[in-house]
Image 1 (cartoon, rainbow, N blue to C red):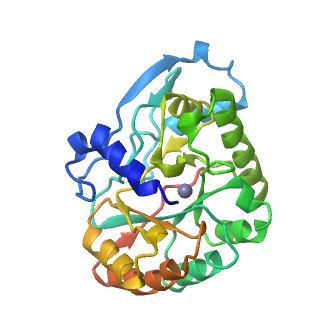
Image 2: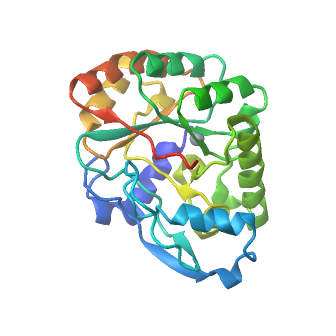
Image 3: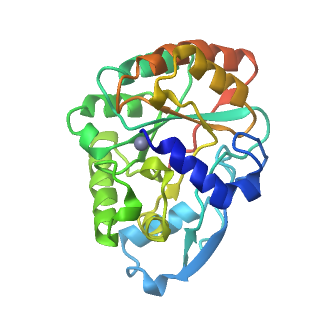
Length: 278
Ligand code: ZN
């Protein structure tokens, strides 16, 4: 939404810049994967939730595109201190992400374009948008897209209590599980604004924090050409592209992807998503 870029910049200034150089530069590693550990003794006793968190942590350091065996699960809850900004893996891999939906006016067109080129993407959904658009979430599942949690009401989480953040996350994961068939393993904070409580709760709920590398700035409706330009200039191995399929007039987003997606494919990029847990 409107402040995404502002918070992106702030986050990059605080943390990402030192690790990554400039936003949009490409590296070969999962960036900013600083972690700290907390004993599970402090977390809920091993119930389904704790098992889910451990299972999720098992592939934390695996390339997102890899299918390697999980590491032995330690009896610890790994809590990140920075979100993932880009993906790892060899070759010209990129990942496409769409936030704030689903929306009946725009999401179907984006899904059509992705289907036309056989590309899968990630959709970070707001729970309150899922309520009236369940069929779009079912379509995402059918077509192999990965769905992440983007809170229920898109609040600025840094202004909320821990209890409120948890509620935003859990309600959204519940409706996603009900419509998509699986609980989300990925979380994106609205406006890119994470804090310690958010990282801790994500870990407890078995989700990883996924940020982005290139903001298309489609939320500013800068014109289809500008959006196409930003994607094509930002394209590089490991880049995660942020677009929006809701939250305003997204017709430019819809038109732009019809241009830049075939260009990326022609340039040899493979558009990927994280492995889905079965
Ligand atoms: Zn958003």
